[in-house]
Image (cartoon, rainbow, N blue to C red; front, side, top):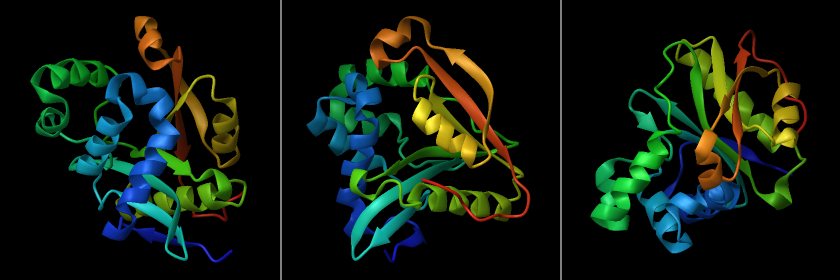
Length: 202
């Protein structure tokens, strides 16, 4: 399989990226960003083409990994974007709920903002290559560590991140918000960067 890892999201792949992102995170965000038609419209509006690496083969998007900087995040958006899709009232409560999940930009560690691989392309090393691209970008920007968050009971993803050198540094309980998002805890994982090594696994 001749898969290319590229910086940036071409316009031709935008619709695929929106769908792939929603397939990966709709279970977590559906109760807030739904219904699906509105969520897809919102994601299409806010995805930043300059805050992502993509895995592409023959014009098909196989995976992506977003990141966050002081300039913004891959799939964040602003209140104006929320209002444009959900209206005034719908945007207010959604923004308040999402704000409880968001964290400030980490000045010490490069922040990953979502990684997903198409189901048919999993277990072929694409996720590991995307993470390697993030590590290279982090080093180029002067960071010496990468941080990500993973749902506490997503043991499969956590095991894969651990295999890539990430370690859990904090577990956070959502409290009553677990009923909104469908999970009780999230874990912060960090990888300290040295020389870039060959990726292993997913």
